[in-house]
Image (spheres, rainbow, N blue to C red):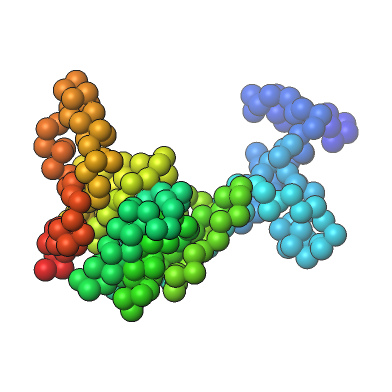
Length: 274
């Protein structure tokens, strides 16, 4: 009897299905066990076994490079971004994240308000964190920088080049939005939101959701510019709350003001800085 026939008879006696042509044979001396490949915590069998080991692929500089675009490597990139962000900002001290449009023009009322806000936040004992770009972000960084405070920019990789504005003292650039968003919340005692577009609205509603669901506590959110934000607030009240998609008390999650000093007082009081 040859090995193949013996293997088949053994399977039949044990009620096992016949081995497929591409399935590896049993390991010698280990009835019931099959050839397998252990790659760290991962076990591969049958058609999923790889022809080389992890070390071989690591040391083979002529091998394929498409692995840098695969999910396991992305996980390491994501982890490294968290590590870099945590390391850069761990000793930052009290700070407020300021959001607003990258399209705000220098010299416009919104830009000037951002500069005043940055200066007032520094006078109130805060550093200023922005997305590090132009427009309203530059304005808040400029105010913080000119007032001698800490000016932070958290950039994001975009299809078009943006870069940090010249008033950023500490800049960290991210590939992934969700890592960047974590830094905006983790290292800030509150948000001040200047007039802005979709990116600004994204940050605003994410912060509101985190406070509403109690993922963060004592986190003041101030909308700066009553004329700009009034339509949104009215819609939330007349549609979202009116149709039961949110509660009336959810309107207490944010404040609306046109006054720089009031904005600073609000974030200072609710964050516990006063």
